[in-house]
Length: 125
Image 1 (cartoon, rainbow, N blue to C red):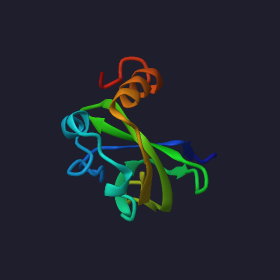
Image 2: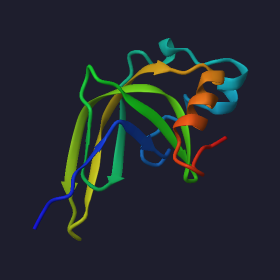
Image 3: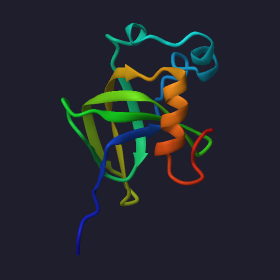
């Protein structure tokens, strides 16, 4: 019997899982690009990612991807500074942790990155 463990280079999370939607707002970003200084010293938490996952550790970046109704929106890069895998009573696993935003894409690059890097049919654009 084997074990299942997923290795991710992208932190794709919903607002419910901890995406900082109150700060990273697409409409505001398109009007006046959000600067890294806005989040530079903040540590954010994510929770309840399905399955057991391992994210790259600093100094290797992970992509920050907002999951909006199943569509992907790339925002920039993060360092995962903490991660925890929890085994649930129903024999499923969830991953939670903390991250620091280290890069925010400008709106034009964000749109291009999202179109190019999202799986087929999952781009927000």
